[in-house]
Image 1 (cartoon, rainbow, N blue to C red):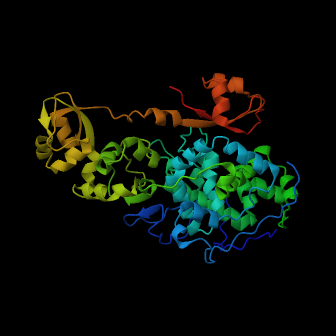
Image 2: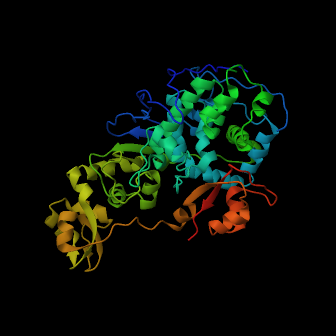
Image 3: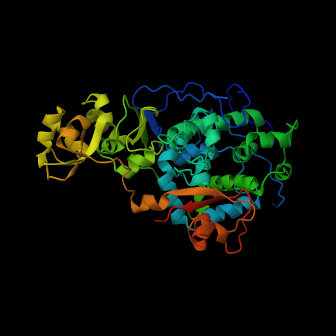
Length: 471
């Protein structure tokens, strides 16, 4: 095993306690990438404020600059792109890897469905890995951490698809506030996470240690290694005095790579992305109500909120990053409608209850805005008339004259979104499934099902458990 893998490196960043330094300017992305910049947007500012034995050698990283061996017709497949960047040992690394691969694929169709839901974000992360010459396996890290769901943190718990703690996120340059949480911003959090992984590789030179540092903390791994920078065998690495959860974390990551690399072995059919799965990042010139943005883009509100979960309120905060992620087909219609009105007006729209019967044309004329914008913002035809008492989205200057403003609240989530809304808890000494179920008012059986725990599974301090919201 080589201590340093032959990948192109960035300059060594200053050693930090929790997070990454500023990233280099971004390189252009190809037209088939999962995310494109519709308008000029500066790069994210990540500046920091203050088992069983088995003798399998660790595989070196492939030369990513070498010509690919896949057919040209398949070159842009997300799974081909991912596999050609695989740099870690896979299925045969250890029995634990094979065991976890079988666990993940106990229900092949369910596993494939979860990957399909993850594809928009997975392709975004893959773009970042390609920009930074990092192995493809790390595109599976958010699946391991959260199934690529923008999990909301509670009371200082990890959040987002990368499961960043608040202090780690802030150290990485991500904003965390009641109005905007960068951990839930898929683009911003992925930029920060990939920068962190790149720095860990520059420090450790071993992708296995990079994964362990991501899970257990950079300085904990450095302390164990001390001055030993020689290549570690599988047995030496397994003997590091890290939590069993950290050793299992590596096995799980390799297991996911194992399945993606050879899905037929596990009866899995990997899903292909649709056009709607490709995300486009657009720059906003002023805040906008998320409900209005969804109507302008003709995108379901739940979908827009999932893609832009970092914005925690109905109206984007003026202090938050001014960008949205949209499905690629929605880009042109959103831009066309958005640019028809002075951008500042979009930050002053309100939901109002009309006092009198009014038509779209009448309301648009009173507000001095294009008629199709009022129709689009309310998801109706321009010939539509609203009855007295109907709730309508209007510019606030008009709304207060024709109706009663309603208190802004996040719209109700769909049943699927409610089911997926979840948090993670960290197991402490003395915790067991019964006490955790009682504390969070859920069933023990649900805890086992959500976390794939067997009847005889024992909890360990430091272990993370998913707890889904139950209404």
